[in-house]
Image (cartoon, rainbow, N blue to C red; front, side, top):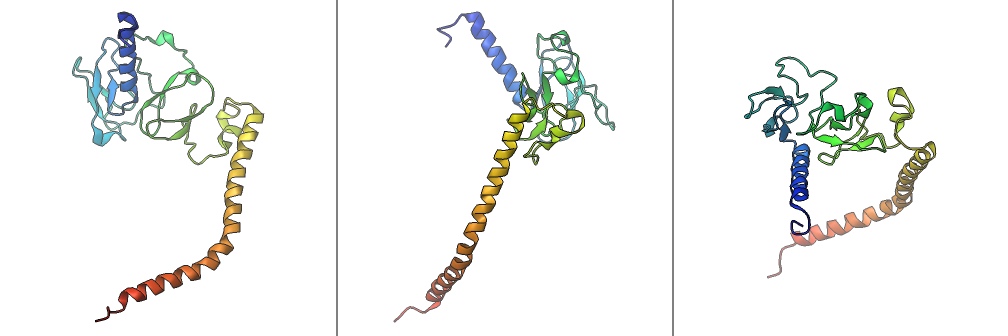
Length: 212
């Protein structure tokens, strides 16, 4: 690829690739200081809880979860600031919380970028499904009932017809699986005694002494 593109484009590609690797790596994070472009390493044993991180380049101490100044004994603020990539400024993004293009997975804290489309997000790192707007878990919400009420009502990003079609498919899958179990249950009941009998015979044959 380096032979086919200009050096500036290749350098930009490598920079973007590195930034993406850092964003998707739960053990690394950017220093939140606006004048610093360093990457800080996190402790692997404490990824699920906020931890103190000290930038080795500028000595800034911050919380690994919310990127604010380290706050021992206090919880993270509900509205967490965004950590911009090197070279980016806050003016590049809208101020409305719903329009923020980058958020953190509520489970593994990896950064996730959403361009547009569906508000049902799935983290590529931990496979956790959640709502983009309120970060509520959608792991067990197969029918997406979450978007029928509350502050996220009608914010899924799909038409009503597509939502109904999705729910019809999900109900059909569960109904088909239940019907399959219902049809197969008589055969399983009939086959169980034969299987147990065969196991008993095999066990009895193993216990018989060898002829001399």
